[in-house]
Length: 449
Image 1 (cartoon, helix red, strand yellow):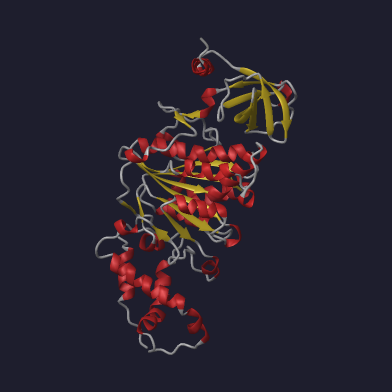
Image 2 (tube, one colour; image 1 turned 90 degrees about the vertical axis):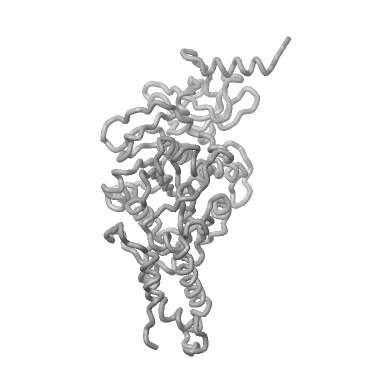
């Protein structure tokens, strides 16, 4: 008796059996979308393949199945496909979808395939294989997000505190200083190890970030995953998943990982390019629906695990025209556990990091503050809010001192609070520094009227 389920199970087992290769051939190529025939029912969405070009055309090209229609599978290549011809041979490559990371990878720079690109020699492979597009730890099996992580940035530690395993978005326009903020977090946070994903970065900025912004000390305790803007969309997408895969391994080793990704926006742009090429219709601002379905699959992989290790995720979002309500920003903000807003006006005024502490929110803040810290932060927020609401009156000289006691105090103390929030990248780090004590001292000041 015909049993379709048994046949499908047999095909799946054969495709993954040692020594057995499933081959097909290229039938058509339009743009970056390759149509393949001959794979039958062996190829499923997400399966990795190798396209064998002629010897003079560059050898094998990695690709991934992104869809199918009947017996025709649609592939997107990870690399350039110059030289591809009708009838070109291809094969499924199940092992290509896995990675064997190791904790000795700290201090290294790798590409989206996990290969080293820093010229320091080969990387050792770990004992356990992790799927590149792995699933998040089930929600009911995760530990709670509780213990505070000291990020070493006063504006964040004071007004947007973060716990181990929390996920924060850093929303900024271009040129506002998010790369410098990332370097500050890499150098000053209390995390055991860092995993940095540079997705869609300009090639010129890559070396600048590694050598000057991150520096030797920051790189020594980091694993950096890179896919520059000139690489195909599949490489940029895979680099983002690779970043979380490395972080998951280190978390499973019991380490507290700080995962920095710059940027989720470029990951979303890569997804848009892939899904549009696969024939999916565009919706909001040209983004197909699959983009908004895939974003949580990436971001939910950060967080606490079942053991002692955690992944604290800080994901930058490059907002278009400083609009924090555009589709990607709005979606990411709804997924994450808080958001940090970087304001161009603050940067233009010369205060870095240019974090707008009033608009930035941490959803774990109530559990982060000690009993003596919350009243200090609450008072500072009230003063800053009073100054913000009345800044036009103050600037125009229409406000008379004595009319509002809270505003009088805000006008006196605003410069002192701003000085405390300002922080240089090369500022010496002192383990005894207590930003809450410093803020309390500022609020206790009484300048003469």
